Image (tube, rainbow, N blue to C red):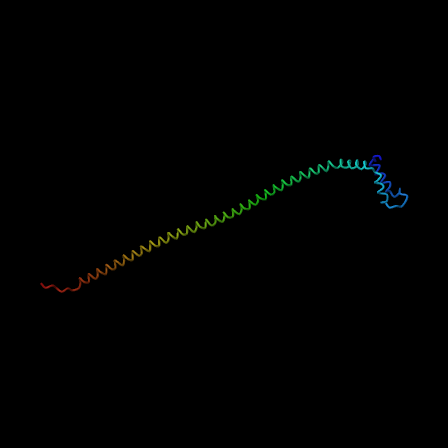
Length: 167
């Protein structure tokens, strides 16, 4: 058996399948198996090698491109994960900022309450001092009134008629 040229095989197949060239009205599938048995194994091997040699470099380049693309996607995914974690950290920083803002608000509130308490303490101290002064003034006035009454009583005693002493 000889090696058949692929173009010759193709031309033979077309000639057999052409209805104009077909003298009897057999179906197009008849004799198809017989057509393939005409081609020898060596021709099949050569055609296979030719087909493989034609498409293999492209397939290998595609495989390398896909491998590189997969690696790039993995790097991209890792980078995205890092960015996501950064955003999560930013969100936690924002939460911390909110907490600090609340802490500042409540600290200011405490400072204001303390100022108010100091003011109230000063006012109560002044009121206590004033109350003490008023109490001391009343006591002094009462004492003076009491002394005045005693003086008046003493004076009345002195003014009352005294029997003369017999000598």
